[in-house]
Length: 329
Image (cartoon, rainbow, N blue to C red; front, top):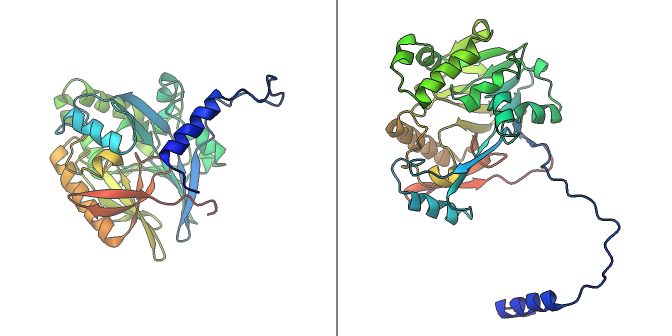
């Protein structure tokens, strides 16, 4: 059948003009759900089982300085190219729970219960989605933190400032711990966002966590098959990970990029949240050249859920290709 655009439009007009088949309401109509399903997704890396657990998504107006070295019109053009609306950003958050076979490991903890309340449930969903996935926080053996921004550490505490993972050791990058716990660095922090980050990190880690914290160095396994990788720039101690089991690997990139439609396609763009944007760009290009060359899957904390993708070189940037959804593990 030769279906042209003119035929399709003619058919649509005819449907609009046609009378309803019945004037009686459908008796079986159900109320709309009004909310999304619990968001978690599982996949295997060799014998290890990864559960991506959504912490929700934050939508806000696109400002002039979200990308420091690109004009707002350029950013809007990139959003439109990805079939996304202009003038607003939606950033997603994806902590992980990894079952190595011997350990149950959380990587990053989301925005926390305070953000859940202030956002009316838009973010801070990690604990409820983890429960929906059948994972008891008391069963977590260790929590591994990539860096000390609130969307990664605030979920270490419950709403009443108790330990969210009471039986877990908390592992943090040694360089990150040294920087944020340095009183001199805190005294020199500019007023506003940076000052707030220092205060928030003291709040989180002084709530009974200090004695449970173990700093780790780069280039070593912190859990079976979980290698720490220096990826500084976003913060002074920002860390990524390679999860390996048998011949299978995935690169857990933390915040090497933020939104992939912007910063994977345009690795030279500088994010307002990167503490050292030039170093962050250098790291981004180095990491993505390696991932593309090795054809290694990447797990992105701020990628669209569930955040698992493949990367290839594309001109001066990269193209990200979401991994196919797998209905079985």
